[in-house]
Length: 335
Image 1 (cartoon, rainbow, N blue to C red):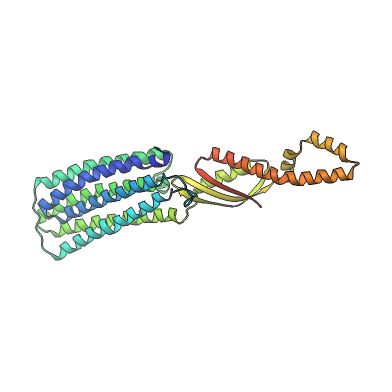
Image 2: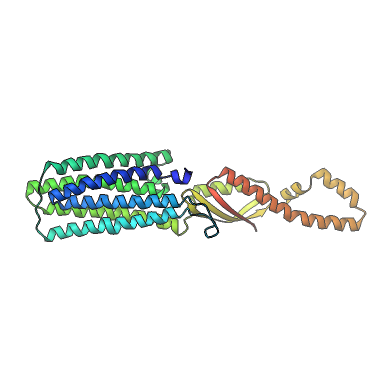
């Protein structure tokens, strides 16, 4: 399995399996109880299951090799399918849940209180808590030295989607349990409807967050600023490069980048590579009294410099890829 496929694959599979089971048991509890909050949780888990299926499609398709139609590869497929998944959370999860909750305010409905409801909620809490732990562990492992807000900014959208969905799922279970309990003790089903609406609000928040993140990748997000600074420093550390101009980068997939920049060569440094001092002195002694030989030497010099510059660029690109494996394509131009 490729590195690209491994990123986010484990948490998504765990969440897919967990949510499939949770959807089934929540559906049973929803039918038995008639609870709006429990129905909201069923739709929530069903939407999560579908969304994680979409995330897996994206992860798989993003590993396809480049071809004549997509010469830079299919890495952005991951973000496209993650965006579709986020829209699914918004329209399917949040939309149906909000409609059901609001509708419950306007229609009288009874809730059948049975121990099965709380058994199902407890099992759901355990399963979704476990998948949340897997996603959280993956984030910690990927960015061990980063603060939590930095992990959210740098995280693979698939892993982040699983983390946020499972976090909301855990909170949703607690909301459902609280709203059903309040409805039971107050004999007021409005609490049940309030629970459904609160769950829909949480889903909307997650959906908007994920849509914004995937949108930034799809429209050409640049590499992280600290990585860009490292790349520019690496380039200018070469004696032959005077400075780097007009540096640009874009995402080709999660953790994969394409860069383009212009460089200004250091003439003396290139000259030293083209002509070793002793060899140049010997050539001077040979041609100093021969104008025709001097012209031939000048033509040879003019021909050698462009080839030397091309060879130097190839050498720099090779070292750059070796030092920064995440950079897949490099376009260096001479200013």
